[in-house]
Image (cartoon, rainbow, N blue to C red; front, side):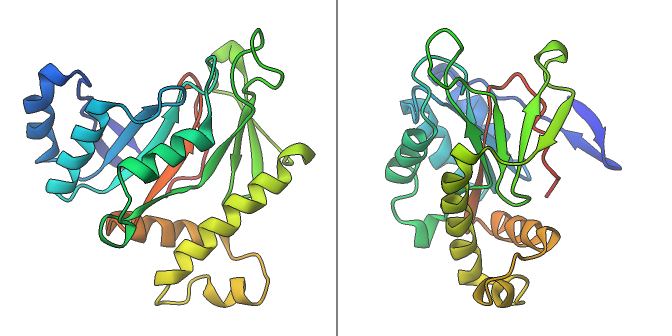
Length: 218
């Protein structure tokens, strides 16, 4: 499906996940400029996900990761991230590493969780994003990060900067980070984009899959 976005024409190819369509997926991967790999926030990395990931490695496809279904019973962002690291990128020096740029606020639904999924935290901007369920997330409200989530957000932000500065040859953010300053978000996004395209990193986002993410484009 082609559509216009920020002055560009994007050709979206949605490949089936079932093992019976492995050949069709491989044919698609040969022509892609990039891919968004969707993982179930409850089930983590499944067998066919591993197969598709290795096919993408074969064809050198840059990837972003989306951890889906954060509003279902048993959803666990950290655990899913751990399974991605263990099963797909154990040798990150060769195959890159997954690095969150968005983390969820809460997990599960209202009927089964003490703190159900509410929205996400943009680690680059250090802002919380909440979605209006009435219009399926088209309306996004930006707010300060909830106090209960600040330590976790800071942990993931430190991880992001540590990874990015390992290959920051143009000093886009390294000096600012070393001096204890907040780097320019635009420069952080530029570095994330560059390292994603060279497959040094796989930016990780999260959500329920039923909302507009509301994150600045890379």
